[in-house]
Image (tube, rainbow, N blue to C red; front, side, top):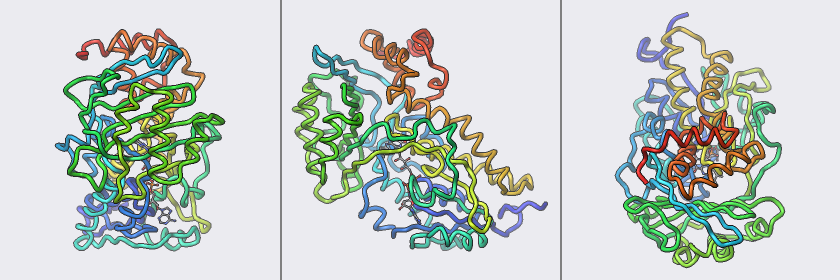
Length: 444
Ligand SMILES: Cc1cc2nc3c(=O)[nH]c(=O)nc-3n(C[C@H](O)[C@H](O)[C@H](O)COP(=O)(O)OP(=O)(O)OC[C@H]3O[C@@H](n4cnc5c(N)ncnc54)[C@H](O)[C@@H]3O)c2cc1C
């Protein structure tokens, strides 16, 4: 077998990518940069992807995933204060009011509108397209189109998110944690609070931007500084993202939201009911008039798919991003896993080319298995931990029971968003003690 990397032979191999979300656009950019000719298929124009749809999700990068992200695209947000936070003011609602504790991270989370991130990737890809022969092709790809597309390319990647063309891949029942969505979600991005706002009645860490994490009987709420696509020069936008347990009044309220204004009102009312320590401050938030798509409601049914599938005509396909692994966003894992998967896939394809290894089902399965072992299994596990899975009852009790008095427990808990690996083995309070001991040096 001869090597086929373009830098070695001058003959670029061709790759089709279906779906221009974060994963598809990121892979298109990185693979074009690696010397391949990419056809990126999108059901929407570039402008529509940015302005005519809600972001698929909040897509915060909690630390470690910023490394693969930087391998995909130069970070244009590194110095923007409104796009980062490095601590949380956490609160637990109980019979005696809200018990709160601050948590300092060991990392800086980056919080940028996912539409903007995807557009950055797409723009950089388009800049390279003319000189590389890569193309951006607009039009929804139907399952019946895949035979022709796959036959015309050396590799076809499906990055159509949670729905789209995912049916080409069988569900991996052993790795899929739940058969149903565990929460109903409501999220809205709004402006009016500075990114460095400290909430008077909810202690945070002074000197850095603080996010919020609040737990009540009927669900959870995250809030944090978030760089919205229309207000990138203002450090005053926040995302509120809330989860409701099934069958609760909170779920009913979430379902009643019909637009950004009603979504914001539902979440502000929730704070007045469950988290009065934040309510007055959050009442200062206002909807972003330029963006009617600044909100989203619905539920994520988790699904881990087999990494390869076939068209009706037997052509090979590989799954990428949410098409490969879709999880509830409660632990902020989806986009982070997509970044890890894309960066490693590009390295793996280039290495295979250089070694003369074919891009076949064995290679693509092996690359996914590595991703599963190094990142995705932990991402799925930490999501179950934050969803309150019974497997983690003792673990959650140990984290939240100690975080108020010992900052190491708070830091260890929030480190799981960035490095979820320990979730695979944490089972007892003693395990949590051992983990927290690793974080005692972090200043409170
Ligand atoms: C509320 C919420 C909050 C989240 N918060 C976080 C977080 O804080 N951190 C984190 O890491 N992750 C988070 N996530 C997950 C993250 O947003 C997703 O994992 C990520 O955006 C998925 O990117 P993707 O490219 O795989 O899929 P998508 O963004 O869904 O992109 C798929 C693209 O394919 C296109 N498409 C679909 N079908 C076709 C077709 N037939 N032909 C052509 N194109 C097609 C779609 O229009 C879309 O543009 C969150 C998710 C949600 C729902």
